[in-house]
Length: 487
Ligand SMILES: Cc1cc2nc3c(=O)[nH]c(=O)nc-3n(C[C@H](O)[C@H](O)[C@H](O)COP(=O)(O)O)c2cc1C
Ligand SMILES: [Mn+2]
Image 1 (cartoon, rainbow, N blue to C red):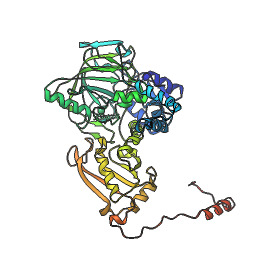
Image 2 (tube, rainbow, N blue to C red):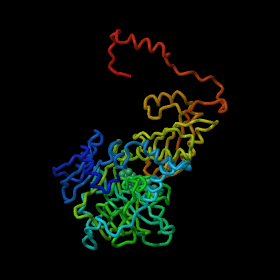
Image 3 (cartoon, rainbow, N blue to C red):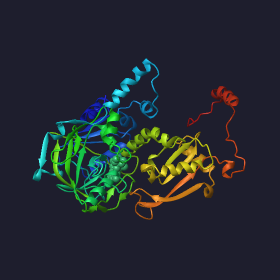
């Protein structure tokens, strides 16, 4: 069963012993950040701050900050369940007999029910504030780190509509609070929200924007999913939930928002307006420096009677967003395999902050295959940002850490095996020669073939014979050797 809304999820987490209520008064300026940081790094629970200084609303954080909670959030017991569900749609087989047809039926019915559902009213509009009643200072928005330019809304679902196609996009883009009714809008130039904004700029029109804060967890998650432009995040959320997201029309603008949201901001972005945004302690573990970004004018706030403010902090990894990224990586793997079929497995270590390092294992079939894989990755959606792609043979465990390092380093002749390319890089990369433009590196750590000019012999890896291992297994207890580490 899908979670209906944020409070439904909080209730489940509490029942499962995965939520800690904090009753002491703490400040949204740095203090909550420090508590949440220690908690996520110590594999702690989700946190619900009931007494945030200066606000009457409680604040929830770290809800997605463990792989178990993350799976729960998207309604999965295991990722194998997901693979099976996807397989039905990615590789549909015509049902052969009556029984097969009967078995396929629920899946087809389920698919019909995952589209967003228009509803006439929703709890996100229990209270409607417009004009002078709009005051963002009432929300318990965090100032996360010492050099941050101010408070930032960090987990918003930014909802916009493309001026030409009319398609709705949902993206998570942070928003710096400037004053009671304006914020920054940090959609980076490669993101769908920014793409739609360019459409409005060309037409010289105001862009309506709605921001939902605190929705059911699958819908929150869908805002970070790297879907191709034009593919609906709400539909993706519905598919995850196996139940369409109920949407209600905004009160003052022509957009629809999740009816069960805690808080909704309605307003607009003016095509030419820009304002300094940042610095902001970012998920790179460094501050993103100040820069000019669009401005969001909030013309109405609609909310529940007593809303829960959902947020997160980013910073030096591991952080909550790392767990969300890992889920993205795993959910999209079966889809990725359809377009880059040689990929057997892939891993983005959290220290690589998504765009700095991807390790892929491939089923190598022809000379130059590893390089083909790199270019396919650099040519696919947000993976274009991947600064370092390491390609290994399919037998290699991409998550093996030190063992992987050993295998990669023994397998490469650097001058021969490193591919440098130029192209778009992540806007948060502060080391590239230019903002958003720089170089990327692929390391071909597969075993080289004669067809790739490698004529030398490749030695076997050292492995003791099973017979000897068995004999020693029997002998071992009598030897009395005490090991401090079991391997
Ligand atoms: C906590 C968190 C904060 C994020 N903040 C931003 C941001 O400020 N700007 C941005 O462009 N992307 C940000 N992202 C990444 C986008 O949400 C992600 O790239 C998403 O796929 C964008 O949606 P889109 O493809 O519809 O543009 C953030 C992700 C997370 C998990
Ligand atoms: Mn999108």
